[in-house]
Length: 292
Ligand code: GUN
Image (tube, rainbow, N blue to C red; front, side, top):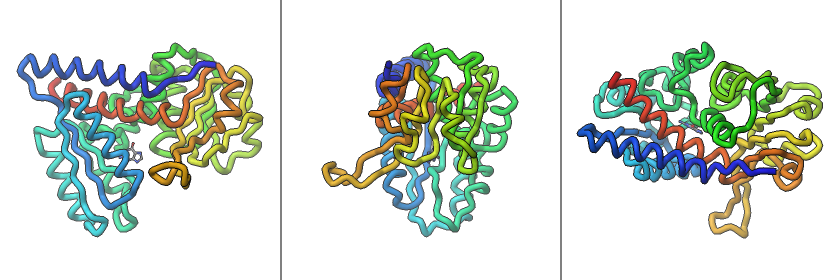
């Protein structure tokens, strides 16, 4: 069994991005600039945002964190997005999800200029991904592929089973795994809450991606010997022994499942840090595309 170490891999990736940024700046260009909009006080969102800002500093990017109370109107948020779309000094930006109920997430996602959509959530970017022309690819799925690539996990002709069909992870990761992308060419089965005989299907997986958000849902009896298991779950569970008052739990019962695996990602320290590193990579890509 080998751990797919997302922390170590993301550090290596960020060092590569940093070297590219340093070279750009040395050549007289400005550094890439990532902006992020955060609405409200969602604890998990605040943690992600702080990590994103920290990573921007690490790779030498400019960053702007724009915070609004959850009383902001949809119209005000749209006005800010228009401003960022038009600002030539902003290379990419994200609007942290989830948003308060009175704001239409679909409308917000579609109002972001596709060339600045470093989350890759805009229908144009998702459509390009489906057509095998993806450039700004959602960061979590892109991070999973990068991990498979850097650890040389074979994918071609393998059966990948994805549990979960969210727009952020399940849908794009299944497109990447089945497509003619690097670490693609799998045969993919997507499972979800209406799937019958789920364990029978997951037991057929050479590569199992768990992205449903239910702590320890994937148990040892659902995994084939020698499988590669990718755990996308990051659920906060109350834990009085922790200073923060919570522990982060993955979708996979790691203790029981790991001994059966050829490769497995831990939580924390697996997919999570890769997501942030790929967001940095997307911002650099957005800047390069803009430059032509
Ligand atoms: N909420 C949870 N994950 C993400 C993400 O990758 N991007 C944004 N914008 N919001 C999120």
